[in-house]
Amino acid sequence: MEKLISGIHQFRKQYWSDNRDLFQRLAEHGQSPDALFITCCDSRVVPSVFTQGQPGDLFIYRNIGNFVPPYSDGTLDGTGVGAAIEYAVDHLRVGDIIVCGHSDCGAMNALYKDRKAFAETPHITEWLKHGDGTLKVVEDNYPEKSKEERLAITAEENVLVQMENLRTYPVVRKAAQEGRLMVHAWFFEVGEGKVYGYSPEKGQYEPLHLEEE
Ligand SMILES: [Zn+2]
Image (cartoon, rainbow, N blue to C red; front, side):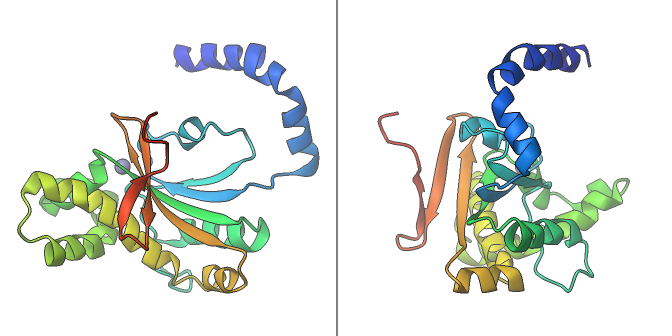
């Protein structure tokens, strides 16, 4: 906790002082973020750091495994993420939605564990069901891969499954049809600090940074 408090002192002294105008502008005019960014709760994935953004840039929604449960009239436990999607697209009018997975994701690892291991934590058991669609895609398409290879593939495929789910939301479909919304699948490689974007034309993830960087 001391680390957090001293961080706040440091923030006030430096970052806030340097960016006082930005904060005042945001307070006066409200937020107008460029994108809705859906990613995992993992503490190593910090979108505003790896995109070098500022307050006000990203409307961020996090959950374990960066799952986007399919649209369900708000009756299932995807309500939180569904509300974030509807608010971002319909009210904030963001131009882009990014779903970003990452390497070494605990949720992806957990998908392959016996669910009985989570008997004492029923919310985890329930939440992991949102990964069942991803598991099926990996099992159907990569039956010959080793367990380790499958884990890496699972995290990447999981983002693509969530992209499909995203398109089940009427606000997303409508905004995309009106040409004011794009959706993107990203992947953050923690150890390398690299960010990849999925190219639907090429059917693969490609680095979003310049190769020589
Ligand atoms: Zn994760």
